[in-house]
Length: 120
Image 1 (cartoon, rainbow, N blue to C red):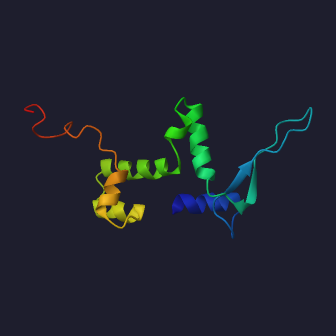
Image 2 (image 1 turned 45 degrees about the vertical axis):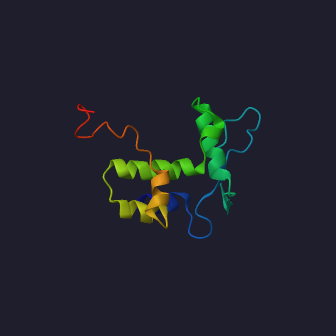
Image 3 (image 1 turned 60 degrees about the horizontal axis):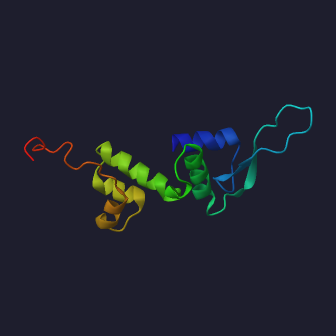
């Protein structure tokens, strides 16, 4: 909440959509590049997915390997790795069941920290 409040204060947002379009207007000839501008309308429903996919492609990953849910999956997996209680993760992800939560978690090598890993 502190980060969100600080971001809203910095952007001067007191009402309306929280997550808004940001763009850089075209530069005028022979002038410095313009600063990004903050719109007043909410992001479109697929905006986050398009942003994540563009950044993934720029980093050398397949564009379609990632989407908006990648952020949710990553946040929940990080919470699990930080030993957050499963009930907290379930609430954070707004999952109705623990089974659905389990579909979002990336467990990696299940035997990496297993007490019998050297025996198996």
